[in-house]
Length: 134
Image 1 (cartoon, rainbow, N blue to C red):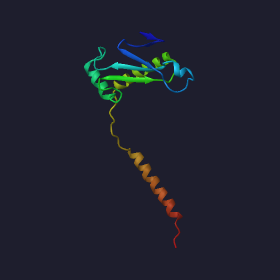
Image 2 (cartoon, helix red, strand yellow; image 1 turned 90 degrees about the vertical axis):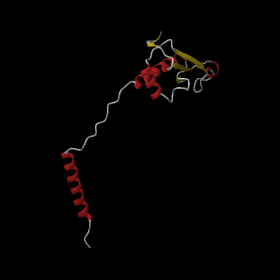
Image 3 (cartoon, rainbow, N blue to C red; image 1 turned 90 degrees about the horizontal axis):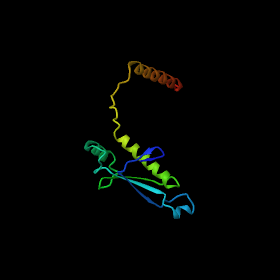
Image 4 (cartoon, rainbow, N blue to C red; image 1 turned 180 degrees about the vertical axis):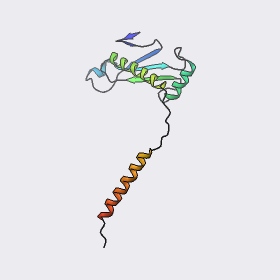
């Protein structure tokens, strides 16, 4: 399915409720807050390896039943919040599968060591000239 160019899957489950914040009298009448529920454990889209990665990396956003919950109440209309929730979902999933490069420890170069030592010597000479010999 498509909402303004954003594709969402039939495995998504949406819940709406009244949201707080700006909106005046509209807040009391219209359910604009949107909550996306995605069942990670029972998903047909993901492989077992992908499921385990998501469960590990997004453990604070996943319930005990294995459901990923994302909420948005930024916009004053339901459609806008639905778009935001779907974008957040795809960004989270994308971040889970990005592999970070391992850091290689490096050493300071010979030139940088020499520059550091020469500035230390120069600074100490300047400070020694400030002292008065009583």
